Length: 226
Image (tube, rainbow, N blue to C red; front, side):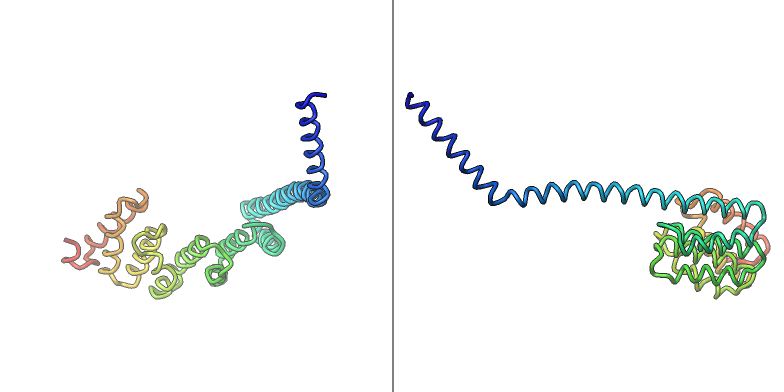
């Protein structure tokens, strides 16, 4: 045997010894890691399947409730939405609460609807965007049944510059001010909408219409109108 062959066999034996020692020391961990990977993959796959199934089921329930509302079966719709609020998955429980409040308004019970929207708005577990939407929905209902202060209590905080709901909040406040005989306040709010290039075209158009009406009827102070 040549020297090269001898050294090669020695090196291979050393590598073999090192592998045996390594496996003896870490083999259990490697097997455990492999098992954990397989189990983890299985659990993740099952979780994905379960969440998709639950979301699909809740979506079907929500759609069924919407169809009942469309067909004028409000009481049945409220029962379906109540069940979805209690057992639904993901965002569907809070969507059910919001829709149920809307159904209450459709049934001619704005007080119950406002109370329901107020509950959503006060619920810290609900995403802030939906809480703000609930405030706006309550304020719009109160335009007919409440005072300016009732409306302002819910949406004044949403009317600040930069708030994505400022246009609708200012519109609600402007209408409440006009109803309360506060023409100057109404004119200021509608002008804020009219001057805001980011406001949706339909809301700006309505604001311009209200400004023309306020000024032509003298409801807005002459100085403010100029």
